[in-house]
Length: 87
Image 1 (cartoon, one colour):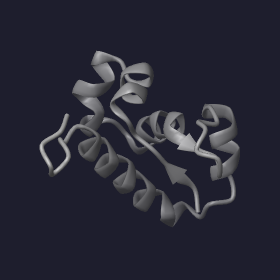
Image 2 (tube, one colour):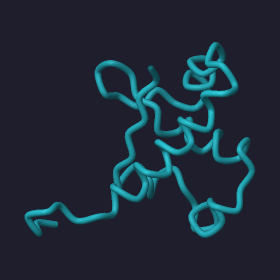
Image 3 (cartoon, rainbow, N blue to C red):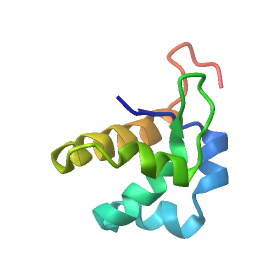
């Protein structure tokens, strides 16, 4: 399984203002390419878009929507304060 990690810091690095505003209006391909910027290896290090694309190469097409939903959920969770109220 490919692991996707979204933090506020990484989001600010990878996503432009335009990307953020229009993410939900983007095609699957556009979201997929952005999502590749948030893929990590087993050590939790971001692998980069090129390596992430190679990792996705053998994933069946029918699983793409699951990864996209996971990515969108992770974006939302990155911007929700922890339940204890700490920022």
